[in-house]
Image (cartoon, rainbow, N blue to C red; front, top):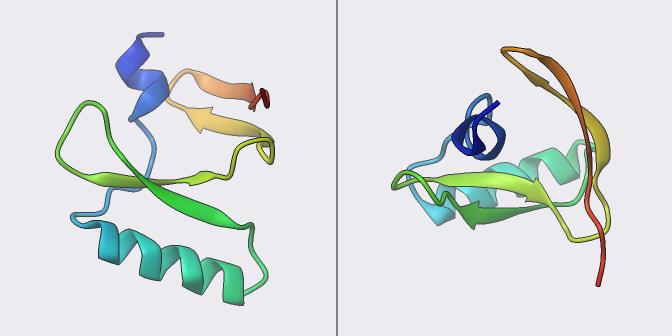
Length: 73
């Protein structure tokens, strides 16, 4: 799996930070996780991600699920 596939593929893309923030707020209001927008390192768009230290999940990719766990400093 390439860096691009891990970092970008399979994630929802938002054209602006404003749209990403609005989506994160909607998700949170509906009982979902506390997400934050961040700028994609590969393309000119935004993704949503867990706040540092809150992510422990399986992310679905074209090559199957990948276990992801953020480490806090």
